[in-house]
Image (cartoon, rainbow, N blue to C red; front, side):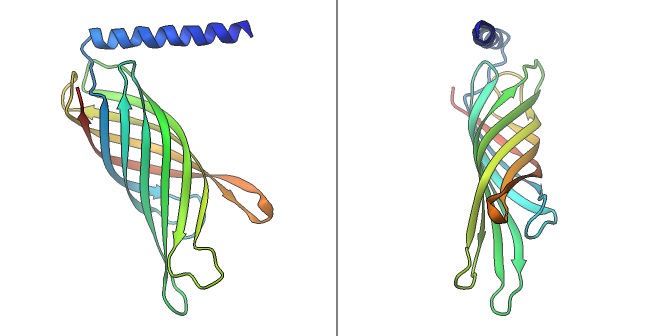
Length: 195
């Protein structure tokens, strides 16, 4: 029990010290980041389990300590299922909140890691009567990536490239759930705002 308290105290002191060091070394990052991105989604299984295109946005609040927190939204058009009447369109939406840690660097390039929790919703359009038209499952994204900024201190914009494993717990028949690995590779532009 006592070791746990020491670990928490050490983490707090380290975070505060890294915030002072980041400011002192001129690595200031503006507090708000809006990222618009596109990429490829590699579903583990399910309807249309081929590689799919995706579009999305992330909004982050950046702290001087290197930590960031915020939200993410992705849209994946998964294609159509042909039926006797109208074709059924399949769309998946990934939305989550999370945290990231940006490793300090004197250069314009920074490595980051992150994770979060959210949901994955798959919606079907024009389904016949009596069939469910949407399904929502637990989502836990785990990310690693690189940010390149236009300048090392107080940047205005940047490019973000990342690899995510979107762990989605899909419900099976009988109430069982299985975790699936749904990888995402994305890249886009980030706008840094605020003072």
